[in-house]
Each structure stands twice: as structure tokens, then as C-alpha cells.
Amino acid sequence: PEVRSQLALSWGTETFLVDGADSTDAMIKQVDHSLEGIGRYSKGDQVVIVAGAPPGTIGSTNLIQVHRIGEDDH
Image (cartoon, helix red, strand yellow):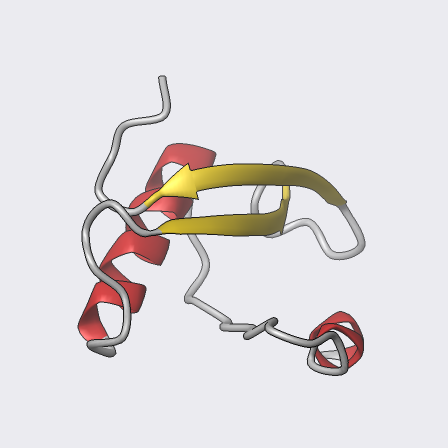
């Protein structure tokens, strides 16, 4: 919540919290599904994902990934 609040102060930044996932790949699919579901993002839109890996470890924010919605990043 603290990081989301700080990022909300940056111009042009929107923050979203998605449900937990068992793996980084599952988390990215969850991001795609959630952002497409709110109707403001479409396949091919570019987003930045900030997360902790492995997922579920509090205080482990160590992942920043530029991602296009709907694309496999591998």
C-alpha cells in the first residue's frame, strides 16, 4: 500500500493490485487478465510491472518488467 500511494503521486502513473500468484508467469497472466478486464487497456498496450519474486514474499520487490499486454515475454 505504501509504494502504491507513493507512485500515485507520479504524473501519468496508475497502480493496480492483483491477486497473488504461484509464479512470475502466472502473475503476468493475471496482470493481463485484470487490465483487459477493466476495459481501459488492450492487447499490445505497454505497461510496467513492479513486483516481488518469488511471489508472495513480503518486502521482496525486485522485479521491474516492461510488458506488452497479451504477449509472452519469453
